[in-house]
Image (cartoon, rainbow, N blue to C red; front, side, top):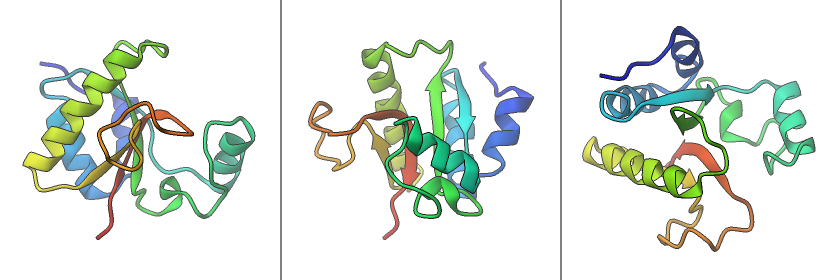
Length: 131
């Protein structure tokens, strides 16, 4: 059974308990790695400058304490495998829904199930939808 490394666990621990519960369940059946949870001001603004995020500090969901967003990738990491990222996202979203959690994925921001209509893709990004 897959499990998180200590490094992934440390990053996940900066996230909202709901995200922690969802990804502890996900990793039981789908090997993955936590890339990032909370981001400080310097890191968030650098991500925007590098084109990897669209919002500056403090407006990102990664900027809250605990973080309302997490970046997670199926393991082993293959950055240009969009199909695998999409398969993984479907697994994550279905797992979350079964657990009563409402998440948004950075490959389908408007949640219309069309995965090629984004102006900005962030295929490793998952965030809590606040209701």
